[in-house]
Length: 177
Image (cartoon, rainbow, N blue to C red; front, top):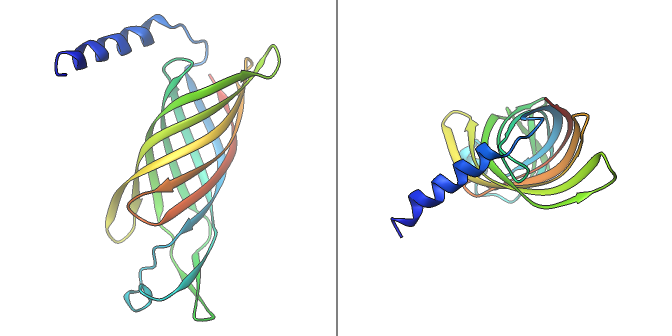
């Protein structure tokens, strides 16, 4: 097993160097709707609550290694407070910023026409949540991604965090350079 790992890494690096991609970087702005079941007030943690979506601004950057692989960095900045309904009462808290570092893979790719492509992508990520305590949690993300040869791109996806009960719906538009 240990002799195969360096060979795998060499093949992976060599295959990315041999691929000539016209657009290596993608930058996009979008919006996300976060549903995070993490309340800070200790007296309400064990109570049943309804989580309301928190709207956030999403800034995403990607380095495209080849047609299948890419590395993503995303920053999520909440625009409103995080809201819960606990025992029929509205509870508001400050929502936390988050930073996501992910390695994504395109599972399926389909040509829409001669210049556009639709891909279904999945990513394993580490999410860092900047609250009173900084929390790092493993995350799984999936998205539908449309890109054109001109560089235009748009996406719609979802994300689920393992360490905290959190789900995010995100969407946006960007450009590849």
